[in-house]
Image (cartoon, rainbow, N blue to C red; front, top):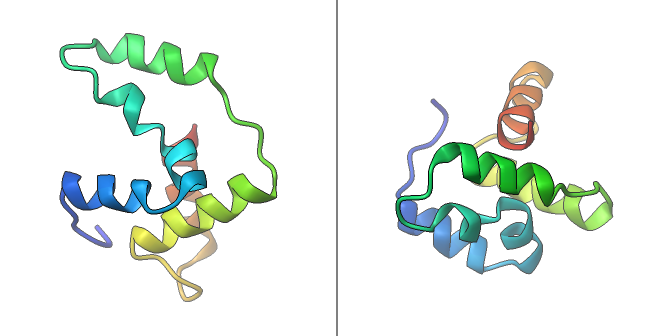
Length: 85
């Protein structure tokens, strides 16, 4: 575990940056009683193309999670793949 945060902190962080909000797509997960299989299907259907804006947003998300330039390549890779696989 690198950093603990509340759901409200995550939502506030996502709302603070348009590209971060787009990458995290929390709106898809906020629908009450939606099965996780439906959420996963929607996320895959609405896949993101990685461009400079998305890459910048991913960097901001990784920093929000508490990782920085001292984190190992493996840890950074695991964080990104966990978020976007």
